[in-house]
Length: 338
Image (tube, rainbow, N blue to C red):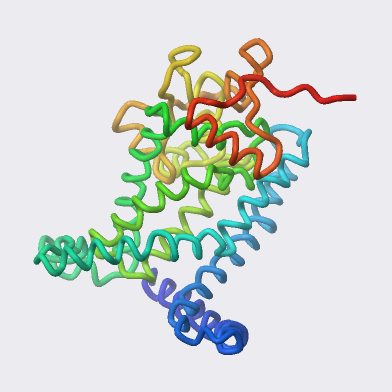
């Protein structure tokens, strides 16, 4: 039954992608003299459609959660609007197009060279099928398998972002939002996202993830991340809270002096690194089911700890992230002239 539902969703999505591509993007590519990019344009249409569906779920469902049971009142809507810019860049395919030009050619070259040398990926589904014949024929099993693998990798990426000084210099931008909302998930330095996505693309190639499954994994992961950042007290419940990362669990990760610098000012590390499944935090001893609602942000943003400036606008945040990476970021928020 679950397989039938997944096939129904997949077929419906495929029909919508085909219609959107043939109605809008195929004529546009021909008009621009870019007919050689038809195949890539079709793939990009799929990512755009995924993003539009995600935005619809966020606005209709997650937005309702935030209005119904907010954790805190939104004090700075201008900051939230900047977060929305990040979300649109990522969910509407702008960042994906950049990856296509910057990352895909490099990955194609490396894996093409490896195949010439007789080295290929491990094809995870084939390995599992050899161990348990027929199990990977079920679409739901393959999807769950890939979700677990990618989330395991994401867990360790996230620990690296909090455990390595240079990487934290970039990732700190994500944690500098003092009021979390469903738009906060994509608030990242572009270099931080580029590095993470490069790792994920390589992993996908290594284990032989089919393109359709990769899209489904990314789409589901991004939706859960948007929910986990939402400004809502809506809880998953005592059982589901141990299975899937929700707003309460992830807010602890953003808590000042809890999710980062948990061993004191200037220290690295934290808790609740999992993106989808808290099982990794439970297994590796980094889970923290803290009940109290704590303020979010970074300790050095507080006046008594230096009032570091992380930027107000998109470009300021990106520039200051580069300066932190090079060890040249100003420590205090510049004073505004009257």
